[in-house]
Length: 284
Image 1: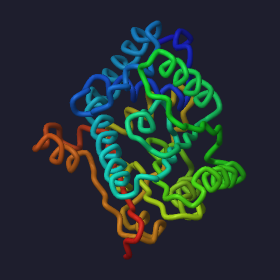
Image 2: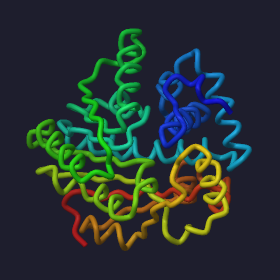
Image 3: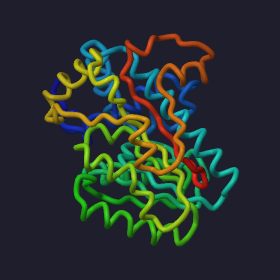
Image 4: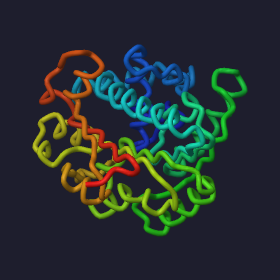
């Protein structure tokens, strides 16, 4: 497919941003993200749907299920944080076109992504606010390369400035597996550098699923779009050691049981993306 028609999407990791939104838009009741489709400009929706269908045919047809479950659980976790600490500040790494700062009334939010994505998100957010589709929220956009130690330090400084001592909810969604192992670990533990209490929620591929046939098909599909073939995988034990707290860890089967009441699609047929949550104050 020629991606030049997608004004924001380019070959590489950035193209996954629209796929995530299309997936959530296809299961609105499950995802509970009324803005998912709105981030995709009308002129580009047909091309995005075609791209999604191509991905579904080449990799697997259940991205709408996995991505909607992931987003729903993260949003519910964030809503729980806000009920307890209404002045919480949100930080999202690999933000793409996620809706969290507009779905939930955070005191302030900082979204982090690659420069082209940040420019596109800032522009589209302004359009949605001007059209009355999204509320005008205090959201700061920061361009950063999470593989750069310098950029990670710059991010930590920006969070400390934005939070100003307020608690932080830190989300790294859909990004760790694209990073080399050392950088993935550094991103997991970024919250420790924010100078305040932090809830951390990260999504990752477990080491036990490294041989997944679905992942192999995905890597082949993305490799044609300049995404590195190598991927980082983590274990529950590694996350516990990195974060120094107990970790609530849910995979696709767990999330289906939580939100569907049953496992509709076996985990072996899905991208094995898990969500791990570390809450402040918990001890190992």
